[in-house]
Image (cartoon, rainbow, N blue to C red; front, side, top):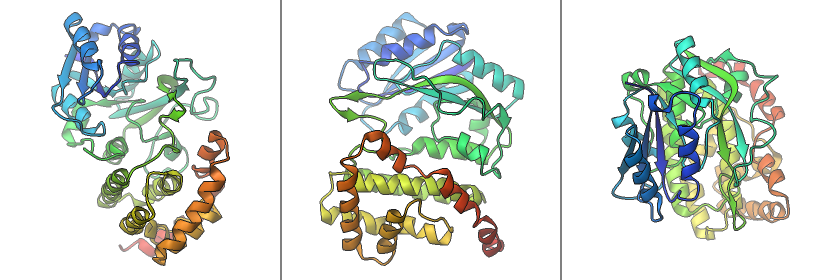
Length: 371
């Protein structure tokens, strides 16, 4: 049995895939104790050739090719888990890479804590692989600690949705029958939060164990809240958000979901505002389909992060979609002239918003204690 299986969904990643694979080979842990499962999601570049090259060279590398493109990584990750032989599971995106001691750190942490999974600090890198100066989580503010589903402060902020800065006990995932969503976005958020809700043995390690490449090619930024979203994307994210909400509800953790929802509400609204791929008729369709989502801001007592968001949500709830779209266009025109850093900062709720949300915690619990 391998100590760790790293599962990598791959789609048109020939430019960066070698960087990731070499970062695994050069780990401080003996890389022969690491199984690497590469799952190609019908790439049209030379990614499959690179996969085959490494699979032929190293016996602990497996190359799997899916027969069709599934649009997101959920299917590839689920297929990878079927053949995983490691005691623990890790996941990586094909254009990112690991620090040289990542596997050793994560393996030692989950063994020492006897945890179901460990989540760790991570850091951004430029498209050329240059690592940024500071990690995502402040290493002085957030020391190692045990997470709790009832902790809406530290645990909420630390538990990001990505599966890539984490290590999972394979037996735990299998016992709880946890899988990634397929053919919809937010597949990793569903997987990660499912693991969190079904375990009381989750820990945070503040060491950096993952490098998340921010790719900027041809002025089209990847991994950004400002990229254009199609009609199909909104249909699929709507389905994903329903499944995530129902999952929290079924597991009795709506209290934690309220904070997750606050972040997602702001994030999704600005995606809708910023996209230029929708006709007005399609925008109306999207708002009608996602009206249930914005109604949650009332039933869950989650205030909008900003006044302009509140104005749009009010119009959506009133089913005045034309006016809601007009507000969106005004905000989009304003945001078009802002630096991308400011645009992305606007798209995330700030600490003030979460403090305001906390004021409604007791009121929400009292109203829903018998629900």
